[in-house]
Length: 231
Image 1 (cartoon, rainbow, N blue to C red):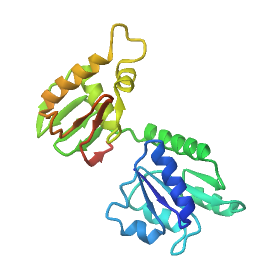
Image 2 (tube, helix red, strand yellow):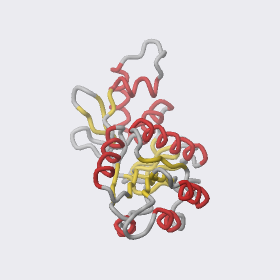
Image 3 (cartoon, one colour):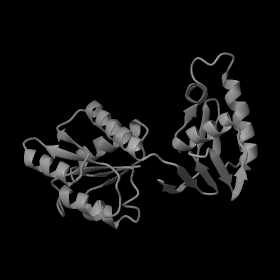
Image 4 (cartoon, helix red, strand yellow):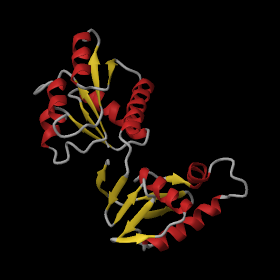
């Protein structure tokens, strides 16, 4: 989830639409007060903050955020604000994008910052409603009980969970979990593993708690995240 704080409506909508088109979940706010009024203000994976805002500037927002989260922050800055950029980086910002900016530059910077953060903050436990995935021990627990999974079943579950609420084609799943060069593997293999995985998790294809079928295309992990532990 990416949170945007930007008072310019046109820029806010452009940034939100760009990130959503790239597959990110987004929440947008027009000021710092609106962000901190949100009950999950500290739960974002990344923050995009304008510096010049009507109630509190981006630097103040960053200082307050650092008391509750270590998620990365990218500042959106106007040309000529070199001092603001330097101050932001000294306060702990991870990058900045100068307005006006191109959408490809924005996406590249978002991707780079999130990749750096994930390398230094590896997730070991992902917790969802009725499901817990431990990436270090490669184990899963559904409804409080341990689930015995094969290596590929675990890799499949992990890939789906890491792409929660995204519709994934069978070809995407096949190439990501099995690899492009795996001889003798077809998209039917994905269907078979999904079926077995559902059975082991106690999931129901007709009323899915975890894995939803997108007819004629692929699958989507639909379970809601409740917590993530970084050990």
